[in-house]
Image (tube, rainbow, N blue to C red; front, side):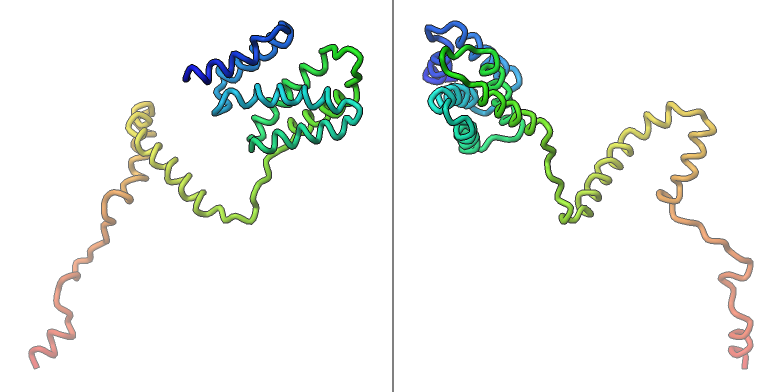
Amino acid sequence: MKAKEIEALESYFKTENEYWNGYTREILCEVLQKGNFENPETPLQLFSNSIDIFTQHHETPLKAVQEFAAETDKQKLTPAQKLFVYEWVYKYVRVSDFGELDLSEVKGLLKSQTERLKNDKPQVEYNKPLTGNIRDTLKEMMQKEIESLPDTLKELEPVQRLNILCKLIPYVLPKVESVTHTQGEPDEYKIIRWHD
């Protein structure tokens, strides 16, 4: 990280409010540990903005939560990143004292938004043809199995190993066809016509 990036990150937890500093340090540590954000400042910035939004719009809690949702949407976060930010914001708002400001409705809305994000399942695209993906997946699986075949065969009993080898032989050696005693001999009808 460059010096400016480090200074920007440190500015979030080097304030006069030690309670705030503790939360922002924990967020940063978790982000750096998980590596779930390309820019570690993004969740800190959203966390800071959320508290500003909620205190500024405490009288209109729905508007406050919607404005915070718009802030997270601007960052084009993945569902996992969005949930991460919402969980930390809710955790902070839930246990923090904001003096005379009543953020109980904001807490309730944040809790429901966080639960909704936890329960959201990614939508499966059913209209997308799967044949290409299935073929590729099966090819990869078969390649891995073929590569590990010698080790697998070593672990088997001799009878089992022989049984598997017999089943695999047709894929390796050409199939032998039955030969009759007349095969390759001139046809009797042709011999008679040839002498005539």
